[in-house]
Image (cartoon, rainbow, N blue to C red; front, side, top):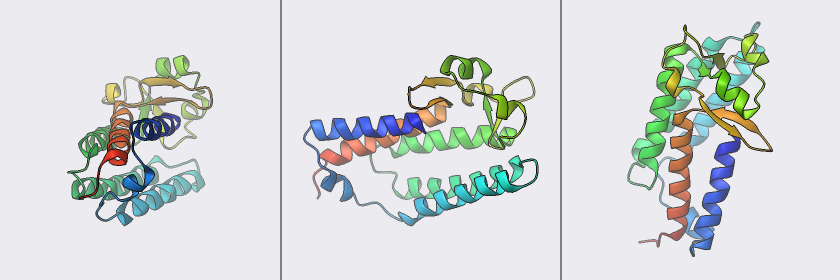
Length: 181
């Protein structure tokens, strides 16, 4: 989440520095914005269910993540002509594929160590959203393999997360400069 926030703030700065405005960004004609709200609500529900179930169940999380991804993907498809949406869609597909293959997002121990991320909860199985990458996990190269040692929140992200952040940055920075038609 730290990477996404840093990229979004950067995109706002770039958009503003290049003559853009928040009013132009707000005026972007997006279809079915409620799909994004539904996606966030379903994903929060999934985290709450996964954490509240005894032993933490990755199944509940994976199911709600799939539903959340479906809502976001529908939003992206409906708004595919907007800047950055192709990147967002590609990132979502990559993340959904690796989570579907493993029931959770595999996390590289090497990348976690480089970023300074504690993996004890994952190793103990108490983090239903993540598993340690290894011989038993599939598609590790598209799991959480990119270390992001931000001072306020170190994390490990996936190539899909990078694509999503890049797509949102493009949407914001271009959208702030776009003249309404």
